[in-house]
Length: 192
Length: 223
Image 1: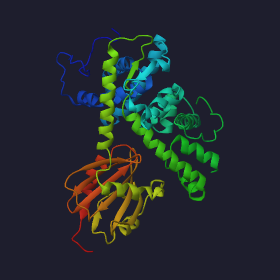
Image 2: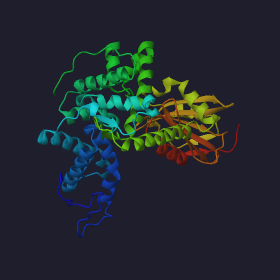
Image 3: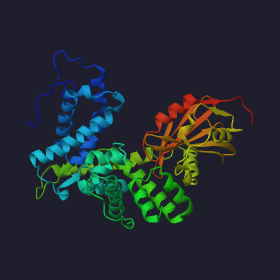
Image 4: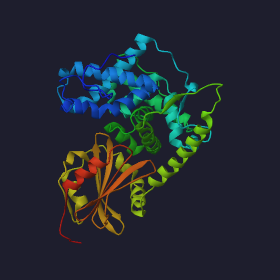
């Protein structure tokens, strides 16, 4: 078992903490955001089982730190940040086995699948092929709705470095999707 | 701002509303074209990321009885994909014409400055529509010729980027219709006296459509 037993009602397994109110607003709020967190974690981790562990652990952490959430309206970016950090922590802690992309396939990409020819499929595969340094800010921006400055803070980079990574991420996607590359920009400024 | 700086901003945040970039785009056709191209790609990226990757490990050198099932599943998925495309097609010529109209005004989504109350009023003039909308969210407001009538064409800034709103006093729809075409997601909803269309490059269009249903007031017929 990768994760400890649930300590809060914020879990999908049906487990409940004795006495916890499953209808509590915060519990409902966290649960409503679980699909977003899973999608975000899967794009980061490129592995469903690991993503599930990350989300599980993140929700535990969030539940323990729930006092820090002053504004329920900010729950989504708050939880996404926790998920991102948990993803980074998991890789640092466990030194997870790197999965060659060639070994990872989208489950609908069978030999007879017409989806292979679909533009969206190509793009999804191209996003998965992006190195984490490019994929992470892109997913934070597009899925998470984070601004350049927020991403810079989260990744401990300068805003210029984030802009450069986002530019290069999209430029790589252009190339991987068969479009012409845009002229590159000067090297990024690096850490903030 | 020079072209290299503009390229960086366009590539890093195609939906960004940087004032200096907007000014540069007004005078640089090349960067404007790049922006339009990147906005199309951005819509596709958003669609691609909307679903989590359905990942599985590929099994090497391992052939067994699951393959026929996988083939059958693939055929089923192919059918589902075709069905999906069919369901997501423009529901009718109205949806198609809306997409065509919005595509014909690509600059509308590039506008970064808010439109004044007078500008909004001018767009609504003679359209038989009044609107209770916070003007600081509106970055584009025109009165456009569409299906034989002048209709208000607005671009509203949302948390997910710009969205186009067309107030169609002379169109009637019985129920909500959603559509997807050319990287745009849209919805047409019935209103008290006409219909409201909302289009965006991905993202949630329903929330804005619902808000517009509340905010738009249909005036007695005047034209």
